[in-house]
Length: 153
Image (cartoon, rainbow, N blue to C red; front, top):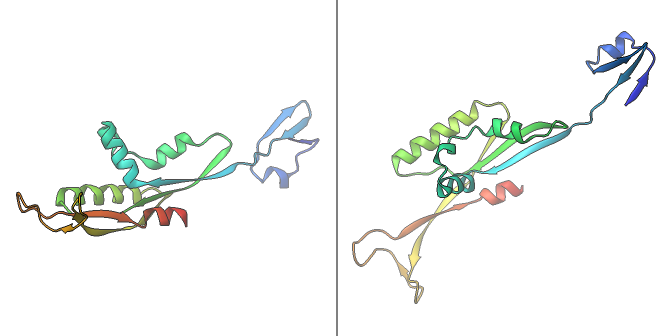
């Protein structure tokens, strides 16, 4: 807190708050901490889904960040890290819609990783298996890559 006996027009133009006590003024300068939220989109999505909180899958991340920011902090950015799914089409559509909604918010930055496709291996001998011997389904799975690296950079 700074004690002032007079407030000049130059000081008043700074837009700071003054408390008047009699003829004296007290200037409160708040050194606010700058806060950046880092969100791993896939961990958030699957955490909410697996917990049974599907109503929060369309979570307003910027609003959540503002709620979690303390009075002595300023929200600088919300950095959202994800990888775009390629199938099935209904999942692609939902994810694209959500990303587009996030992009309308001024504090959100989107960072995209990639998927790699791998074959399944036999659990016993680790021999690569391309198809299920029972139903013929492909045994490839997708693994997200670069999201953790992007968060760490």
